[in-house]
Image 1: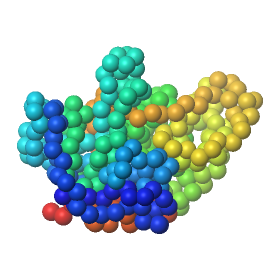
Image 2: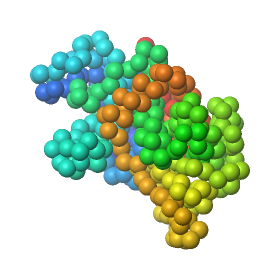
Image 3: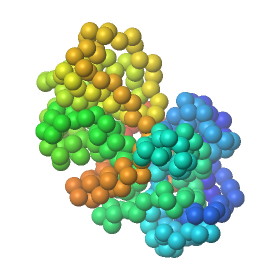
Length: 334
């Protein structure tokens, strides 16, 4: 099969990705073999390629927003049939036995594996996924629309719930890329007022088109105090800015897997009066199922930018330079 892999992590402009031939994967017990139809391009893929997240294994194939057709079954695999369309997401496996898995917090599993980091992902013609960690894709979405739902959407959903936004509350969103523009739609659908702070003028325009009350620069003060906020931009310098925009008792949820250093916080200005700072770590399968049901109900409308599968390196370079607004998606030829 053809695939892209991380050869030597480094700046994306230096060409850390390589494309070539790899052996076809074979599904193990409980796994399904997938023919990839579309794969979203996530900032985590960029972190992997550039070495912010050291690849777990040599020549790792990125990609964890995968829409695919089932083309093979491993021993004991019966949940899906060949020809069904399924999705593979960031969470590839959990141990099922640690204290976190036993209490229903499998996103905090002590021995997890992640698609495109610990296992080979969707920047390839074929991949495998365990049947218990795959999702049925709602028919309302095309392959291109569905791809970003499988990480950007799921993580945005968990971040929204983690923020503790009250009904009808005011939500601040810092950074407005693939995940944020989906999260904004969810929050607005549920009755929230959304205030977007982002450096991109195009992203500000998209936020207003989607129904945001306000859109301004990343460091801007929203016109009202916020009940909750989510930081999607991987910029630690925005943490104190977002905390100071919160009303008493508000929470800031940091949704990225990688964040630059956070400046020293001033307790009185940034945290006092029960303001809270928390991170968002991966997701549970329940998050994924709940989110996809909500996405179909709204229905969400992802803003996508299609790239030919052969242009994965260009898509990551464009992502690194903020050349598009929304979610890039790699598409296999029909």
